[in-house]
Length: 271
Image (cartoon, rainbow, N blue to C red; front, side, top):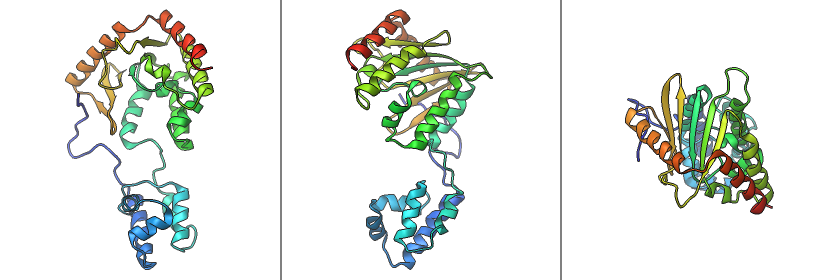
């Protein structure tokens, strides 16, 4: 299934900012002045040549500590490159996900099918940290997304999650992290939030995870691919995913059965 937002003249992905392009050009200028080839500087930094090439052409957003290391490797005054770095877009959220994040925060209803991981809105901080490679900025951004669950105004959305049982069996970060995470799933369930489990052998959805949002009476869909997430409002795409949602949910355990299954998994598997 291939669905995506189609916008004339744009592409999904990060559009280099002027500051990012300027930073890349400065790094290349100082590298040339130091008499270093791209490969040689990459080796000094401990990164690959493609990584440095992406940085010098404005296609890669570096971290502040990486810029500081580059200043040291090129023997230039501390802060020269950092001044440009301060102007960069430091939002750790991938550009392709930001559009969906905007939809998510305004949604009245979210219907979510997950096949491999605990949904981001229900992840504990420790679980998210493992998945995100302990990137503190990315973890903080994920935790910030969860504020929609407890906000007072506007009213939190109604959320319905259907998860393949494999999500509960996949070990992320060890038994304690998984026990706390699986237990929190049960604690999250309430009048505006449901979690149902579907057995892997009967799950009709194998093409990938997806989310359907209803915002201001309009349906928007998000689905994951091996490369990036895609957002679509196309009627045909939304219809296909809506039918997939109904199909998966019809095979899922009831809410009561799902709660008991999740509790049992926490106590029997993650101890």
